[in-house]
Image (cartoon, rainbow, N blue to C red; front, top):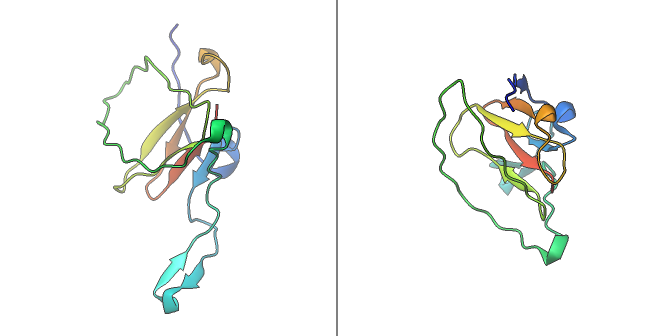
Length: 124
Protein backbone atom coordinates (compact mmCIF):
# COMPACT_ATOMS: atom_id res chain seq x y z
CA UNK A 1 0.00 0.00 0.00
CA UNK A 2 1.28 3.45 -0.86
CA UNK A 3 0.49 6.58 1.10
CA UNK A 4 1.96 10.07 0.89
CA UNK A 5 2.55 11.42 4.38
CA UNK A 6 2.93 15.16 4.82
CA UNK A 7 4.76 16.04 8.04
CA UNK A 8 3.49 18.74 10.38
CA UNK A 9 5.47 20.82 12.87
CA UNK A 10 5.46 19.07 16.23
CA UNK A 11 4.12 20.60 19.43
CA UNK A 12 3.29 19.16 22.85
CA UNK A 13 -0.43 18.90 22.07
CA UNK A 14 -0.36 17.27 18.62
CA UNK A 15 2.27 14.69 19.69
CA UNK A 16 0.72 13.86 23.09
CA UNK A 17 -1.04 10.69 21.86
CA UNK A 18 2.33 9.21 20.84
CA UNK A 19 4.64 10.57 23.53
CA UNK A 20 6.45 13.65 24.77
CA UNK A 21 8.08 16.55 22.96
CA UNK A 22 11.37 17.02 24.81
CA UNK A 23 11.91 20.76 24.82
CA UNK A 24 12.98 23.47 27.24
CA UNK A 25 10.63 25.97 25.59
CA UNK A 26 8.09 27.34 28.08
CA UNK A 27 9.77 25.51 31.00
CA UNK A 28 11.03 27.55 33.94
CA UNK A 29 14.47 26.24 34.90
CA UNK A 30 15.89 25.95 38.38
CA UNK A 31 19.23 27.69 39.00
CA UNK A 32 21.80 25.20 40.30
CA UNK A 33 25.55 25.13 40.96
CA UNK A 34 25.61 28.65 42.37
CA UNK A 35 23.93 30.01 39.22
CA UNK A 36 26.38 28.46 36.75
CA UNK A 37 23.80 26.00 35.42
CA UNK A 38 20.07 25.69 34.91
CA UNK A 39 18.10 22.48 35.40
CA UNK A 40 14.96 21.78 33.35
CA UNK A 41 12.90 19.13 35.15
CA UNK A 42 10.19 16.68 34.08
CA UNK A 43 10.65 16.97 30.31
CA UNK A 44 9.54 13.40 29.46
CA UNK A 45 7.86 10.42 31.08
CA UNK A 46 10.40 7.58 30.81
CA UNK A 47 8.44 4.35 31.24
CA UNK A 48 10.28 1.05 31.76
CA UNK A 49 7.96 -0.62 34.26
CA UNK A 50 6.77 -3.51 32.07
CA UNK A 51 8.51 -6.85 32.67
CA UNK A 52 10.77 -5.29 35.31
CA UNK A 53 12.40 -3.11 32.66
CA UNK A 54 15.70 -1.34 33.04
CA UNK A 55 16.31 2.27 32.01
CA UNK A 56 19.38 2.63 29.77
CA UNK A 57 20.94 5.32 27.60
CA UNK A 58 22.29 4.47 24.14
CA UNK A 59 23.70 6.60 21.35
CA UNK A 60 22.79 5.90 17.72
CA UNK A 61 24.40 7.29 14.60
CA UNK A 62 21.93 7.55 11.73
CA UNK A 63 22.34 8.17 8.02
CA UNK A 64 20.49 11.15 6.56
CA UNK A 65 17.80 10.05 4.10
CA UNK A 66 17.05 11.54 0.70
CA UNK A 67 13.59 12.75 -0.33
CA UNK A 68 11.18 11.53 -1.39
CA UNK A 69 11.74 8.88 1.25
CA UNK A 70 10.24 5.41 1.15
CA UNK A 71 9.41 3.85 4.52
CA UNK A 72 9.48 0.08 4.45
CA UNK A 73 9.58 -0.66 8.19
CA UNK A 74 8.50 0.72 11.53
CA UNK A 75 9.66 -0.31 14.99
CA UNK A 76 7.37 -1.01 17.90
CA UNK A 77 8.51 -0.62 21.48
CA UNK A 78 6.00 -2.65 23.47
CA UNK A 79 7.89 -2.74 26.79
CA UNK A 80 9.08 0.80 27.33
CA UNK A 81 9.23 4.37 26.14
CA UNK A 82 12.10 5.36 23.86
CA UNK A 83 13.61 8.84 23.64
CA UNK A 84 15.46 10.38 20.71
CA UNK A 85 17.54 13.47 21.46
CA UNK A 86 19.93 14.55 18.68
CA UNK A 87 23.57 15.05 19.66
CA UNK A 88 23.89 17.70 16.92
CA UNK A 89 21.64 20.66 16.24
CA UNK A 90 19.41 19.32 13.49
CA UNK A 91 15.85 19.09 12.27
CA UNK A 92 14.47 15.57 11.93
CA UNK A 93 11.26 13.75 11.06
CA UNK A 94 9.52 11.22 13.26
CA UNK A 95 6.86 8.83 12.04
CA UNK A 96 4.21 7.32 14.31
CA UNK A 97 1.21 5.03 14.14
CA UNK A 98 -1.47 4.30 16.73
CA UNK A 99 -0.66 1.44 19.09
CA UNK A 100 -1.57 -1.99 17.70
CA UNK A 101 -0.12 -5.31 16.56
CA UNK A 102 0.90 -3.89 13.18
CA UNK A 103 0.97 -0.27 11.98
CA UNK A 104 -2.26 0.97 10.47
CA UNK A 105 -0.80 2.50 7.30
CA UNK A 106 -3.78 4.79 6.79
CA UNK A 107 -3.15 6.36 10.23
CA UNK A 108 0.61 6.91 10.08
CA UNK A 109 1.56 10.49 10.90
CA UNK A 110 4.82 12.41 10.60
CA UNK A 111 6.14 15.29 12.66
CA UNK A 112 8.89 17.82 11.99
CA UNK A 113 11.07 18.10 15.09
CA UNK A 114 13.08 21.35 15.07
CA UNK A 115 16.64 21.81 16.36
CA UNK A 116 17.20 21.76 20.14
CA UNK A 117 14.26 19.34 20.62
CA UNK A 118 13.81 15.62 21.06
CA UNK A 119 10.96 13.16 21.37
CA UNK A 120 10.01 10.35 23.72
CA UNK A 121 7.73 7.64 22.31
CA UNK A 122 5.26 6.05 24.71
CA UNK A 123 5.35 2.25 25.10
CA UNK A 124 3.46 0.50 22.30
